[in-house]
Length: 94
Image 1 (cartoon, rainbow, N blue to C red):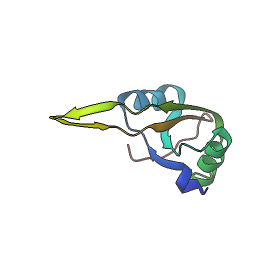
Image 2: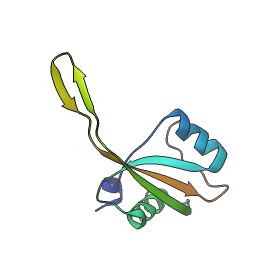
Image 3: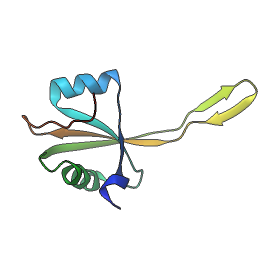
């Protein structure tokens, strides 16, 4: 897989913004087949000035949702929490 296929998008939540400010940890949605070494390589390839210190991954299961009589399911996603070296930063638009 290529780097832009592994890293799908940055996650913008209140917790992710606080993690960026406090611990220099960025949250990304990643491909479900990617493992920690794939994510580390993709981040360092997409952002060449950044050195990754640690990667944590988690799978979020899809949930049942209803809208009127119709039932559906939200997609299952995989998240990666990437901690980078102090002094480095990633410009992801916020």
